[in-house]
Length: 309
Image (cartoon, rainbow, N blue to C red; front, side, top):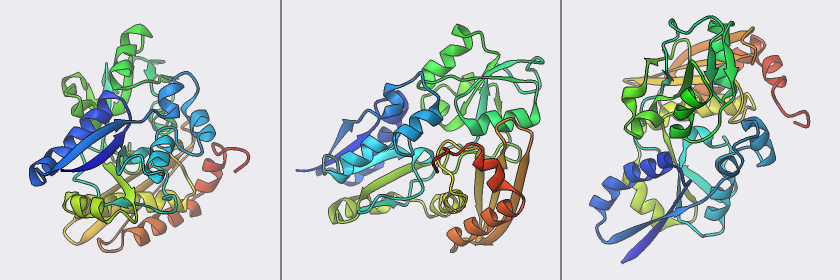
């Protein structure tokens, strides 16, 4: 029997994502053994430093570098990432396959609804985008940096006396804890990180067998949406830890992309929305990025980029 080695992070969520991805493949290819390999990332090892600092030390991503290295070296055949954690540029020799149908793209509040948060309420998150968007809507809120996997961050509602935490709805639901969501935040006000809710399926470009086995796992609608979102992010020269939101939505042959950039203090926010043919997602992403840059997005992002960038 042939064996396909599948790499991922060690978290409960990463395990759930691999199970979700492999379930239909195991049915389609009963003669293939799918073996999982756990790979620890810098963001898993260092849960005290600010996520942006960990990302900078790790070469642009706190949650993908070691997995990418394992793929390049041939230790694994495929990596199942959270797509939002991946830099927009693939290392030489690697490609992203079209992702499966993505899960819920929204952010979710746990512990309280936005309207019920008290004045000066303490809200836990490690993402600069979420902090920026929340402060734009509720400048009275006090962000509290929290790190860790989904169960750990939910537990900090109690251990750190927080009024709420904000997480990706997809992760909460994939772990079967959807009943702990107090409010789903609207994407019109809180567009998610580019690629949020989608899996990033990465292989070596020359691995024809892996490409053949995985060829039918992608969803063309999700693929077009996330390609537009990530193209916009790439045009803005943003990374995984910048306050950029993007939401692509396909309706028939039309793809609409909403982009947003917000200063970390919430004081400034620029937005743009355009539609175009579903066959040209990268072009649409570049056009939306151009509109954002015309409104001053570069000045906002310059404040959060590394000084050496």
